[in-house]
Image (cartoon, rainbow, N blue to C red; front, side):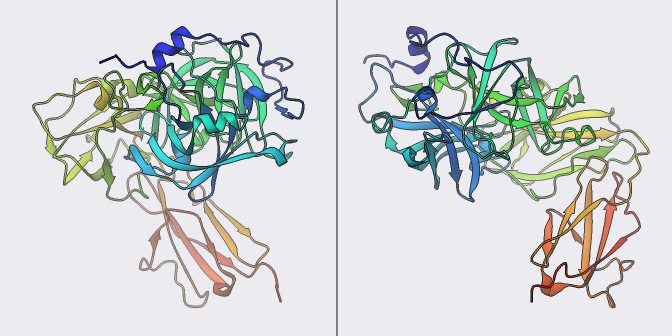
Length: 492
């Protein structure tokens, strides 16, 4: 039988016809440019668009050029985007799942009447374990999309390196709209990052401008040949150093220490992808592909994952189950060490699993590494190690004290009150309750609930007394805080 022609081999054989400077006119680290394309100047970016998936999440995405000499005429059309844009849950690597939503191409400010819209069909692969990346199959063929005038983009033939000039092209939500914008910069370094509860390895760091909400899933492109080097996943823009390593405030992890860099963007490398395509199709069972799902992990309480522990009185624990018979785990200081076979525990049951931390730990960031297997004699394969479940935990020195509870209470125009709990390492979690002002006793410990999310109090429940407590790293509560909430406006 004729051997398969892979996308990786094709990339070595092909060249880019328009090699040169695809960022013509863009200043390195300068402001982003709002793109207009009535004259066809940016036709090479018609395949970068706006993705809306189930739940109305808005992200960017890029159409992938998977064509090979052996591709069938009606080979599928695939998108690349961020894993977090597809609603995969923590501990799950999705393969071959239905997905609802659509993508809009030709997404320029001045081409609203010429948009090309296609429905999403299958989530071919999506993960947030070590990489924030998703491959989505459309309900039409690549041939049809190209006939409609949309140009796909190829993956880079080799991994990105520091100092390479790049372009960030996506659809961030800005004050001047949310159509395609482009900005120029360079890849500054490769970094492992933590953004609790996620860890993403070998990200391409850069400081291209206007990488804002909506830019997730957009391609980071080689300025020289317009090939895809990475997929933008997160940024520190709008975050604070005090929130480092938490949601929307990623930190770079090295030797067990986290460092927050202002106005820095992170893109997942695509270097694992070429080995998973053959003859125009995504196939993670190919021998050289390490994107097999491995195993699935289900957290007992996914909405409350403590981000921190205290070296003095450490009661941190992680109960979970897996879809495998056995689990291994270990604790390390750097994410890459999770992919090393050394140091894992002996196999334990995957049905009633629990990871705890040692009683005394050095301050800093620790990584909990978990692997699920069905056969203890089979060994740990490269694909399994590449998809290891990794959870960051920040250990604080002995004696850390909780500050008073920090809330943001915002009256809404409809008379409701929005309650936002300010999250940080030093405020592991809140409890709260509310009720009629005359009968609600904040000093009474009964009735308190854990605050997993921000929430809104409806106008018909107001006025109300809101009682909140913050709990320290040793599990001790602060005195309750009391807030009287009233109807913000009179709607008649």
